[in-house]
Amino acid sequence: MFDFISDLTNELDEISSNWWFILVILIIALLDSVIPVVPSETTVIIGGVAAGQGNQSIVLVIVAGAIGAFLGDNLAYLIGRRFKGRVNGWADKKDSRRERLDGAGRQIRKRGGMLLITARFIPGGRTLLTISSGVTSQPRPWFVGWIAVAVTIWSSYAGILGYIFGNSFKDNHTAAFWLAFVTALAITGLIELVRFVRERRNHAIREVA
Image 1 (cartoon, one colour):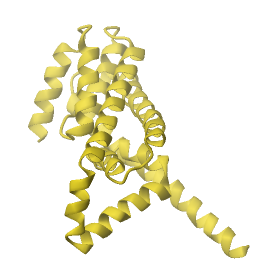
Image 2 (cartoon, one colour; image 1 turned 30 degrees about the vertical axis):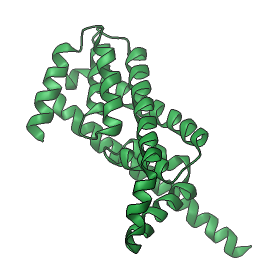
Image 3 (cartoon, rainbow, N blue to C red; image 1 turned 90 degrees about the vertical axis):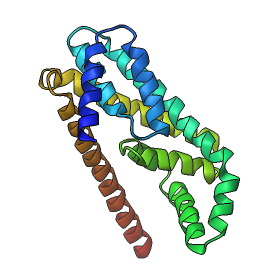
């Protein structure tokens, strides 16, 4: 996997100065939402690096990443909706499966849109959650609205990361991947910590009342 990421990022770097690299960012961000083995964060970061060197527009890099991720997340949602009958049939064959699927739906409803934002920073996790949103029939307008927020934050973070630290990444894009991954985990952990503290505080307030 390490060699694959290294080779792919090097190939992406070689074409990052071309005007059509913006389309590459969009396509990879779309595919990564459905097939979580495509390094979309790294691609957006490379676009940010190219923008920092004057070869791309940072605005177009961020917009392309956001649009691609938005389309991909909605595609994953539609896949979940399309196959929810089969998934429910599979879950009904075993109580533990049904409990896990129902639990996923409860978590999505309980934690709301912040869960979609958090999941966007976790490769693989975002695909699982967006498909689960479709399977559990979460309201489409609600899903679309929160996904728009999530992909904007995600693409801005990755693009600006590359734009600011471009000199550090220009000869080592594998490092960009790992920095993006670790930063994403840190952001996820921070969001979850804030959520946990708020839930504990609200619970304490309810007990006093």
